[in-house]
Length: 635
Image (cartoon, rainbow, N blue to C red; front, side, top):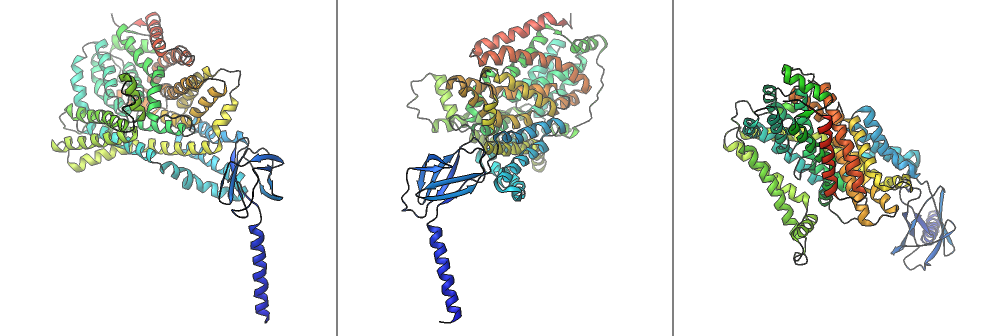
C-alpha cells in the first residue's frame, strides 16, 4: 500500500470516528438571545431518534422536564438568571452552552430612548428609529458579543422593519389610510367640501349661531383632522370676522373639533392607524380573543376627553360665556372688531392640498356621495365579513344589540375598510371627471397629493410596528408589570397613562407618534398589572379598555396644549390667528376638560362606575364651571 493510500485510509478512519463521536454526543441549541427572568425554549439534540431519554433531566444542577419532542430534538423551558453557562446532564452525558441573558431592565431602554429623544429632538421618526436600533444592538451584543453589533444594526431593517411590513393587516392599514387621504384630497379639489360649507354659512347670523355653525361643521367633517382644520378654518374665517368672533375663538373651535372627532369616529384617516397600534398591543396578549375593531368600539365608553371637549364647546356657545384669556380676546373682538394678525407661515403646502381648484363651482354632493359610500360600504363590509364568521343560528335568540356586537366583533374590519375606501376613491374620481371639473390626469394627481400628506404618518406607523416587535422580543411589558407596586391600586393606571400620553404629545407635537410609542407598550402591561393585582378578567378588561381610550385621549389633549403640534399650527394658519395667542387661549380650556376627564371620568370608570353615570356627571361639572367661572361675551 502506497503512502497516499495509507494517508487516505487514516483520514477516512479519523473522520469516521469523529462523525461517530459527534452522533453520540448530546448537543444544546439555546435561542439567539435570552432575557433574565423570562422563560425561553431551549433545544437539546439527541444522538439519534432512538436514543432513550428520561422524562427528567438536570439543567444547571436542578431537575427539569422537557415540554415536547420531535425526532431527535427535545425542547424544554428555561428561566435564565445571571449564570454564564447552561449545563444539561442526562444519560451520563453532559452538554454545555455559553449563556449571556439580557437583564430584564434593559428591555425598557428602546421605548424609553424613543420617548426621551422625541421630547428632546421634537422629531418622532428619528426617535423611533434610534429606539429600534438600541434594541437590536442590545440583543445582538448579548447574543453574539461585540462581533454581533453589525448584525444588530442590519436587523433594524431586514428583520424588524420588514417583519412590520410582512403582515397583511399592516399593509391593509397603510392602503386604507392612503385611500381615504386620496378621497379627502379629491373632494376638496373638486369643490365638494366647499359646497358643504356654503350650505351651512347662511345659518350663521350672530356670534352664537356663527360659533355653532363652526362647531357643527367641525363635527360634520369628521373623517380627517387636517381637512377639518383647513377647510373649516379658511372658509369660516370671513364669516367669523363679520360676526365679530375673535380669531382665537375661531382657532379654538376649529382645533378642538378636528382631532377629537377624527379620533373617535368609526371611519376616518385615524382609524386605520389606531387599529394597527391596538393590534400591536394585542399581539402581546394571546390570551385575549378580541379583534382590534372590537377593542376600539369597547374603548369608546371611556372616551371622556374627546366627548367632554365637544360638549364643553357647546356649553360655551350656548351660555355665551368664556373665561381666562379667551374672555379677553372675545370681548375685544365684540367691541373693537377682529384684528387680522397672523404669526404663522408654515405648512402652506398642506393648505394648498385641501383647497378647491380655482374657478370650480362648489357642489356639496361631490363630497357627500364619496363619503357616504365609504361609511355605508364599511358598515356593509363589516356586516358581510361578520355574518360569514358567525354562527347566526347560535345567536338568533339574542337581543339585537347583542347580536350586532357579536357580528361586529367577528368582522374583518381591515377588509371592510379596504373595500369601502376603494369604492369611495373610485366614486370621487368618477364624479370629478364626469362633470369635467378636472381631467383624469389632474384628478389622479390630486389623489396622489393626498397620499403624500399621509407619508410621514405611515413612516411613523411602520417604525412603531417595528418598535413593538422589539418590545415583544425583549419582554418590556413584563418589566413594566414588575414596576407597578402591589400596594398601588390598578384603578389609577388610566389616570397615569393619560398624563404620560399628554406629556409625550405636548413635548413632541405628535398625537400619532404618541400612540405609536405607547399603545404596543402599555396595553399588555396594563392588563397584566390588573391580573397580577388579583383582578378578575372582566375587571381587568375595564382597565384595559380604559387604557386604550386614555392613550388616544391623552395624545389629543397634549396636542391641544402643544405649540409645536401640527394641527395646532394648522389651526392658527387656517384661521389667520397669531399662533401664540391661539395656544395661550386654548390651553386653559384643554386643561380644564382634561382634569374633569381624569377625576370624573377615567378614575371612577376604573372603579367600575358605569359610563351612564360618569358622562352625565362630567358634563354637569363642566356646565357648572362654565356657569360659575364664565362671563358673558354677548348681551
